[in-house]
Length: 129
Picture (tube, rainbow, N blue to C red):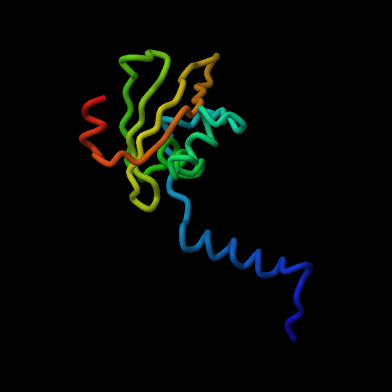
């Protein structure tokens, strides 16, 4: 006999397992193993709120930065040398452009996402940067 758990928790657990099965994590990008993301959560000009305005999720940014596949390319910004530009794909092959402040303290690399978006021009946009 099936009995429902607390407030739909069985359904929530099942849906979480189903999500993990249908969208399994990819291998970690070992080059980024000593890297931590510093998310700015409360400023609409930079960070999570700004990125969400472009229709990109924090999870998609982290997929581009920390997983293989997808493939990612990086280079320093010409205008802002303290920033690194990333061009890469999410698990669902959505290609996004990510800009992060980038610094190292000791052996830890820190990335603070400033913006992320899916450029209409695609790779041509990346090549011009």
